[in-house]
Length: 243
Image (cartoon, rainbow, N blue to C red; front, side, top):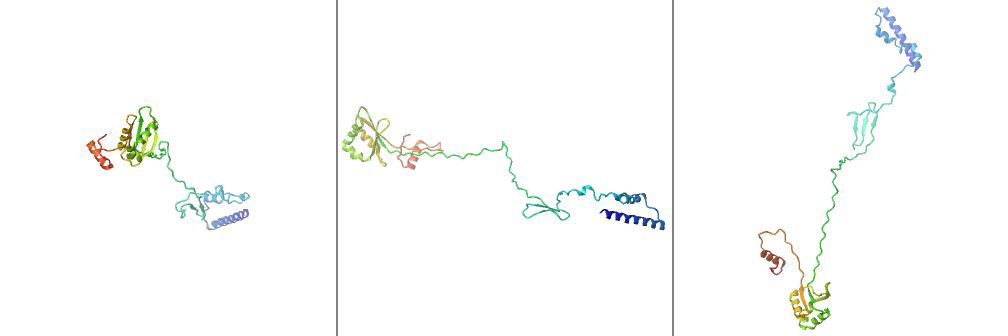
């Protein structure tokens, strides 16, 4: 490189000297001060060849940085994943694929709602259908065994209601309970007959299964008689004026 510069400088000096001789022979004016300064600059002088001149500014030796891609040089692939940057020299700069993050709405303390607990269904109350029964309470020191002997000794009672009794048990209060079979509908009359047989020894009363009916959104103009008649018609029960 140094030899080429020296050779180039020598050729340039010869050309300048030939140019000066030509101007003198033609009678032209000498070159201006600016041209003279350009021709006699250190880079073109012979004495400056001892030192190697700088061929390019220091900034050109730095590694070129990636520039921002313009709209013309930026290309998007089919999947819209990678953005391609094409340089003027034909080189292509490919950006790394960035992970896509879903934009999740920021939740604050005030806006965060507590998690709703599932509503528990109310437990359905199981209805135990109790059978009708006859409760016998002794008045004096008569035992339950004596009461049972008295009832079994009456032939008319055994014939009318002996087959209606399912089992016999003793209540927590000490009373004797004659539980009737399912489907027996003459519990009140049977209780009155047992009470008549026992006389002054004990008292007998029939206990029937009762059902509670709740009526909602009742019209204020409806009377008690109209409600009782409608219940008797809907439930198939005999009309009763009891509350």
